[in-house]
Image (cartoon, rainbow, N blue to C red):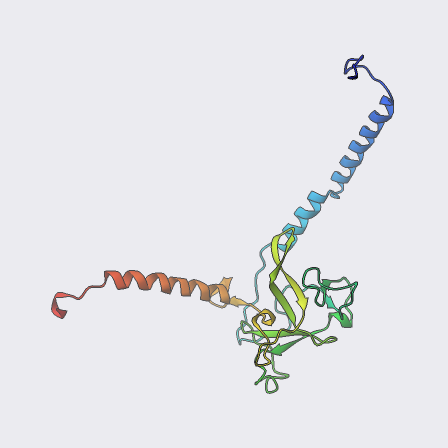
Length: 221
């Protein structure tokens, strides 16, 4: 049998006072957290503004990385993988950000070519060139996995892990290659890598119209 409503919506029935008090407390708590900037949306906005704000890169005059150059590093820690602690998707050695720096945060820059690695040991680090970033404790190289994509507040990102991927020649693969990118001395608003990409695109676009419009002159016929 269908239930017949005997009261209009304006009639207060049951624990109406308790429901009103709970709603008022929830609203007060919401406004209090909003004033203090503790809402999830506010935290995400502040995080985006701090991490994604434009930074002026240092200019490398001699092609090497120097102390005092403007770069962005967080403490990046890693340790041997276990069943309880490993990368989320690849299940390889986990890499995570921490607040305190210890031996798990120690990394060293290694020359990418294994045949010339011994000769370059101890030399200054070159910028805008391929390098390896090796973890001192586990001797595994930092890697970005294109086949394992994670959703983050910033969109899709490749999963980072500490694992050395070797090819048939015992050389590290592209997923282990990294760059220290600096600004172009002639265009400090752009990185040297961006300027090279712009020049490549300009040359490619400029070559096709020239090949189409150029015709032999009357003296050349």
